[in-house]
Image 1 (cartoon, one colour):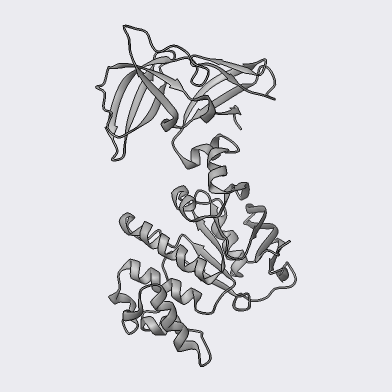
Image 2: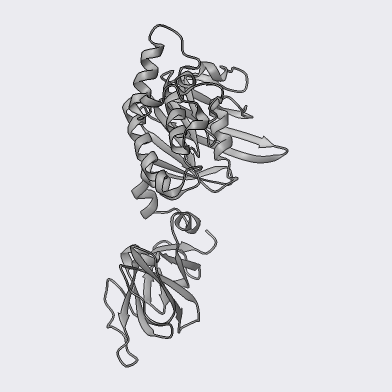
Length: 357
């Protein structure tokens, strides 16, 4: 079995009596991109700083290629860990040229060739004699990437490196960065609070909350099989329908939902994303007939509809309890407020969680 390039085991860190990293374990294989994803303040940047050697953990160990680099007694300093770092502000030296920034810390006869090769790889070869203040944000990001990769680190740590870029540029820079990282073969641990960024870049996502990793998996799996309601809600807007379990079934205005293994009497949240609701027209006060796949239709009154570019977002106030449900419809669908329509829920796209989970 292959040895992980990076392995952290049971890392714990307290600040002023508050546990900010709580028994975190993680592995990253060579050439793999793992995203540590979570809201601000969940402990992900602190975890990154501990791996880099900038912070010291209270307990737990860090290993690179199977070798211990840090526990609570033994500690290899940051510069000896073969770890590259990229942060939000790029941290380029303003008094050094692009070439000098990338060469900073390099030694040996091959340094100049390495600088030129990396700048060419990130499309910045012609800027080698420019200074950081002469570059755009995207260009500075490319130079920062080249500088971090120059010493050929075995591990690349990236803390929200794209957050300072405008939306139109960000996707292109992400894709270019991912291509360069893959070509260099480094193991990458990327910290982000943006689910879309994690889905776009990661081979594996580690979802972090309140100092703990609550779920790990490939982007497809973690999106389509969330551990709980909060995990589902972190990746997209959700609708929540409440019910109570009897005989492994939950009765709702949309028909029955399966709740296997949930004890009778348990209150549950049935979660569905807006794009998985189906809309049908009102037929003189009647909706479509029930189906095994979509259950029973329930009527709602359109509150508002907005065109979002590639889809339309329609909000309904439901007749059965006055709650608001949101649907996402491909292309243009803009019914007038006050229009009665019927909604059905795809059974294969629902998640059923015990209330409060």
